[in-house]
Amino acid sequence: MTTGTSELDRWREQIRRGGLELAILVALSGAPRYGLEVIRHLEDASDLVLLEGTVYPILARLTRDGLLKAEWNAEEASHPRKYYRLTDRGRRRLTDMTSEWREFARTIERLIAAAERGAS
Amino acid sequence: MRLSDPGEARLRGYLFVLRQTLRSFLPKDTVQDAVREIESHLREAIANADGAPNEGVALERILAELGTPAQVARAYSLEMTLDEAAATAGLLSIARALLRLAFTTARGFLAFLGLFVGYASGVAFLAIAVLKPIFPANVGVIVVNGVVRSVGAQFPMPPGAEARGGYWVIPMGIALGLALLALTHRLALRFVEWWRRRARWRTDAAAARME
Image (cartoon, rainbow over all chains, first blue to last red; front, side, top):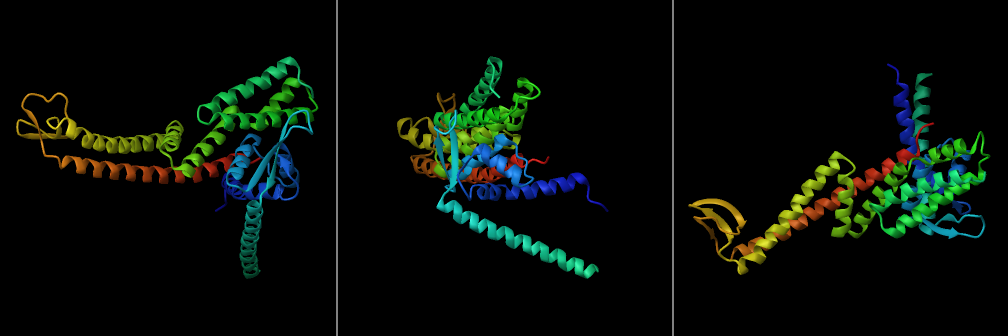
């Protein structure tokens, strides 16, 4: 029995979904960024292609949850830009999420390696 | 790329539709901030675009990458309405969230209907308790020709009907009314919380679409 392409796509989509908040927090872990900068950074640094308009509600949600702080800057461009940066709470969440993600990836890696050793 | 007048009109049209859609469900300040941010995104993307093969195609591509106003508004409004309801637990914000869900899916509509009946029944029991001392002959167990027809108030009483039951209707109405209101409100909050998690998951799914 083979796994259909659409099933594999759904599975990939679920992984992306699960990692999206983490990816946004990582994108903001260095310097503050505005929305389009976050989107472009994620596209350039990963293969995450985002439906751009739905990233803003996620940024708004993370701000409401106290993980990000948003500030308008009307001076540096011809149009105002809304910059996001991590709050202390956001930085703690990023640390927790990163270690959870790594632990999960290590667990799966171990499982795969054990299965591969058994098969050879 | 610098926008011509028709391009500027297309951009303003997009923002107008977005603003109107968001206004149906969100407070004015939130709408203003969201539309300002989306406008900033579009102007930034337009400024960085090379305008190839022509302005119209380039602008439509930028708008398509952002999503339709309805897609953007849906993601904003559902999450924000549910977050507000869950955070405040206020009757008005919960009613707004339930109304929003009723327009979104069949399941939301059924839940809205069920919870509306719960709230309305609670209020009806409290109304019975309030009306009994004012209209003692019209409120209680309504009996018509010796057959029990209902419990509540009847205006005017039909021929052969009488309201039985004494003033015990008052504490019973208060107790049942409050219990029903509390239970319905608790159920509404649990429903909103469940849907909130679901809405967040869906927004993430919509954002992290596959290539």
